[in-house]
Length: 144
Image (cartoon, rainbow, N blue to C red; front, top):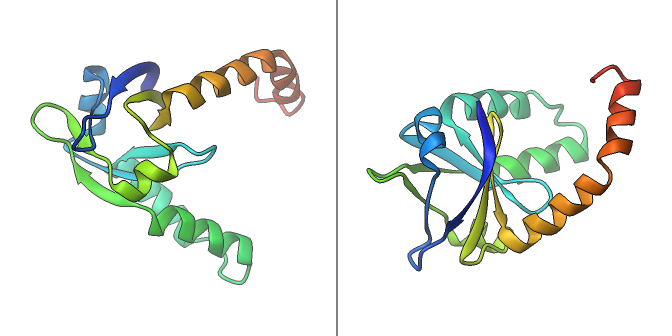
């Protein structure tokens, strides 16, 4: 399971070292794509195949589902994890997530998220402030 938060540096060649504890689970090839909340999602190939199958099964007759499928699939890039655990972040994805030098690398169960470090800190503070109310809502639907 991919969990935890790490701050890593994006080098001038747009390479980002993945945390050592994530590398084994991610494998030698990953998919990077547009994420939600202006971050990037990084999936191990097996997980990406599951996501892509679900996206392909969405009804084409609805504009929202077509748009979301395009957002995720057209923005997806397969990339290798090099021998020292780095991935190359394409320019268009780097710009989408506004990645600078400091990048928050966040494990979220079956995927990794890449965040602009300052944006991540602000997002994390907002979520922490509302955690009790969110837990209440999730409790009402039986999640926790």
